[in-house]
Image 1 (cartoon, rainbow, N blue to C red):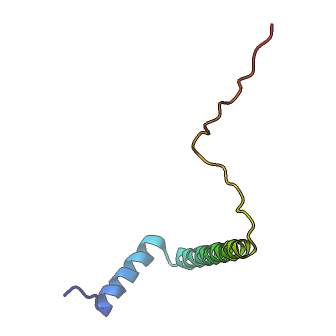
Image 2: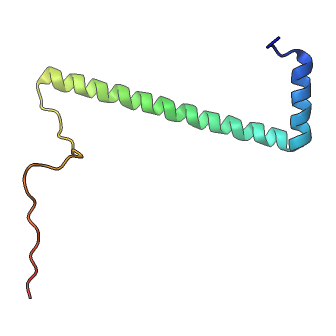
Length: 87
């Protein structure tokens, strides 16, 4: 119980062939493969960017350079001058 046998998988495969047709199955598999390749390359790119930024941070800490300032989402304490209208 709770485990699929070979017959269950054959029935599932037959239902997919009936729903999608034999011609569309290779196209769907090809599209899925392309999507997975793109996803894998993007994940590896993100990991390499994270590693590069970590190396940059550690190098900056070793040299003693200040970290670059980032814009904050909270408003600053200083008031912003509003433009005045002249007539």
